[in-house]
Image (tube, rainbow, N blue to C red; front, side):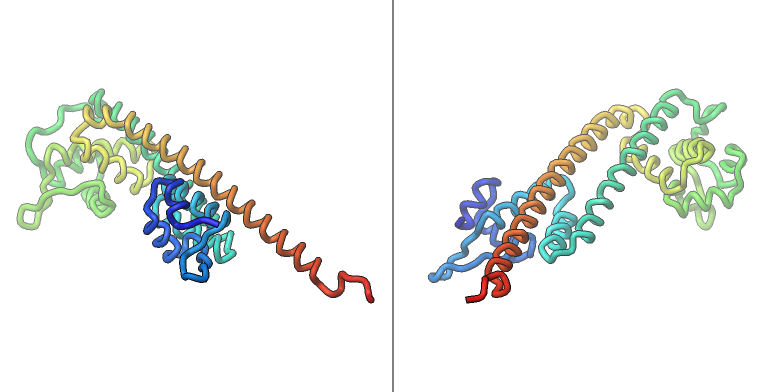
Length: 251
């Protein structure tokens, strides 16, 4: 039997955190001693180990969804959350590859055959520059790729907007979907251009690798806990069969 502080100490938590996790339903309810104190077992320890590892890899909300589903016996729902997280990680890796390719293009100046305008331009000028229609630029705006300023009712594209539009045009020709292009453009803006973006890509890649390894560890601890639950169920089944009247010879 364990006290809250015993479980907490293993993971560097407070005893209150363990009680909070129990109240949140991410570990099983504790039994109580005759004096009213919580009493935990190996089952609680395994659940807490799984939850803490899942939090590090998947985040608090998905980890909570996974553990609550497991504890109510709904493994398919738990695995759905796991699957969705891995799909998201895969998409993030794809976006990183797209951003890395975009950084190379931006650094080489290959987005345009002509020097970019040093002043703001209208939608018509930018459309002619790229060889697209104004309707296409407005569609990109709705997708979050472009964010031009407004002069009364007209759109005005800054030099940075032109850069984003040229990059979007290049990626679109490469077959990328609009929401993927929007993610790339967001990273370009956040980095402040091609140079800072290129410098941040390796750090981004390292964060994804760290996250992927943490997800693997979380999945492993979850698998350990699922095996523990299966052993408990087999033990309960064997005990029930042993205690069943039908299993005893007639007196």
